[in-house]
Length: 107
Image (tube, rainbow, N blue to C red; front, side, top):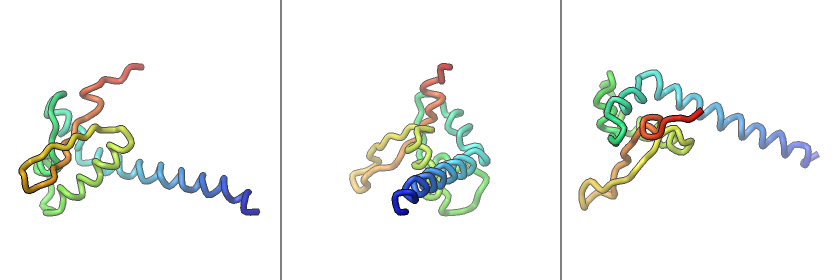
């Protein structure tokens, strides 16, 4: 019986991953995060703080929340991320670019 449950568990894990990605994608689309990144230009990389500053929110935690959202999107190849050192005291900050702007889709 355990061997019959294995495919079902894998299906459940896959389904939860897809749902998580779709909800994360929706969380980025609704406030126009992709448009903000695209408006910066094809060779530009923005930090989460720079993107959050352009969003209509007063939440002081917005950059951290946005950074988590963008990491999920980067892990699924919806965006690109680079890490650059800001100061010698900090490890660095994630800088985000829209994959669609830097490398157009070929169909």
